[in-house]
Image (cartoon, rainbow, N blue to C red; front, side):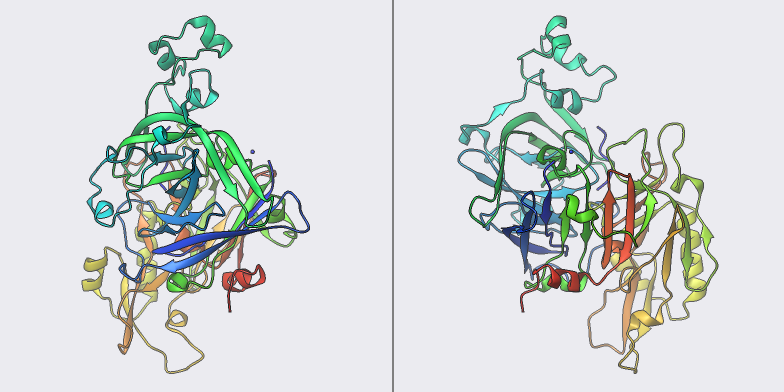
Length: 485
C-alpha cells in the first residue's frame, strides 16, 4: 500500500497469497514450540472476477485473510489480501486489508452510516461489512492518556489536539487526561483518506486446538465513519506501535512469507506460508541478506537499497541513487510492500528499463492490449512447440541487485503475465511493472507483491536486514501441510 502519513510471542501464520479469493482459517499448536501458533488459511475463488491482476494507477492492493478459529470466510478484492478480524463482545467479524505499508488498523463503523466516497465498485460487490461498537460491551473510546492517541495525531506537538479537547497541562504531562482522544484523519499516499475515532476493544486470535488462543484486551484501532477511496478497512502490519503486528506482539524477531504464483488464484486446496516469530529466522545461514534501510520520514516501514537491474544478458543498468538512499527530507529508498501489487520504478529510470526490454524482445507489440489493460509493454509471444519450454522461457529474465551484493532473479511469471484468453497460437503477455507518479513524496520505488511470488522474503528485524530466496512456494506449502491432495 502507499505510504501512510501519519514487538512478543512467536506465531506461525499461513497467508493465502492469491488474487480475487476467499479464505477461512484453521490452526494448530506447534508441538515443538509452545509459543508458536500455526494457522492454515483455505482458499476459495471468486469466479466473477477476471483471471489476471488488473493494472492500477495507484500502487495499492486489497486482499483476504482470517486470523481466528471461527472459520469465517474472507474475500480478496482486486489484488489484495483481507484479514477477518474478530473484535468485540460478542464478537463481530470484519474483513480488512492486510498492509505492511501502514501502521493504523481501522475498520468501517456503523450499520448504515459508514460513508465512502468514490467507492461504487466495492459497494456494488457488497464488500461493506462494518463494525458496530454499540453492540460490543467491551468497546470504549481511547483517551488522551493513551500513547496511541499521541501516535495517531501527526502535528508537530502531539499534545495540541488533546489541549483543544480540554486536557490541562498537568494531566498532559502526566499522561492522565481521561478526555476522549480527538477524532483523526489518516491519509494514504495514493490519495485515500479516512476519518474516525480511536477505539479500544477485545481482539481474539483463536486456534483450532483446545487452549490455543490469544486474546488482546484493549486492542487499539480506528473506528472509521467516513472514507475517500478506502472502502475496506486495513490491518496495518508496519513496525509502529499502532500496527496490528506490534499490538499482537508478532515482531520481536521478524517474519517471512512465500507467496504462491498467481496461477493458484482459483485453487481452493493450497495456501501460502507466512511465518512470524523465531521460526521464520531459523536455518537461514545460506540466505542472501540486504540491509534494511531506516527512513527518517517513515521509520516504521520496510526499505532496502536497489543498486541495479539486469535484463537478460544485458549489462546491469545502474539505478538512481534515490532508490538506495534517502534525501534530507527522508524521501527515497525501495519499499517492500505487501499492499502494493506491482513494482513501481521512478522516471526516467523506468523508461530506460522499458527501452532495454524493447530492444531485447523481438516479438510483436500488442498496443491494443496495452490500451485495454493500462500496462506499458504487451507482447504476442508464440506458444513453444517444445513441451519442455513455456512462453516464459522465450522472454528475458529480470534481475534485481540490492545492497550487500544481493541479487534476485525474478521467477518465471513475475515480470510478464498472460492477459489473453487461452487457445490462441500466441499468448499476450504484459509487463507487470509501473512507473512511480512524478513528484510523489515517500519511497522512490516499491517492490510489489506480484514480483515476490515464489520468493521467500525474510524480514530479520533484530538484525535489521531482509533476505530473498527463490522458492517453489507450492512445495513450501505442501511441506507445511497447506496443500490438500
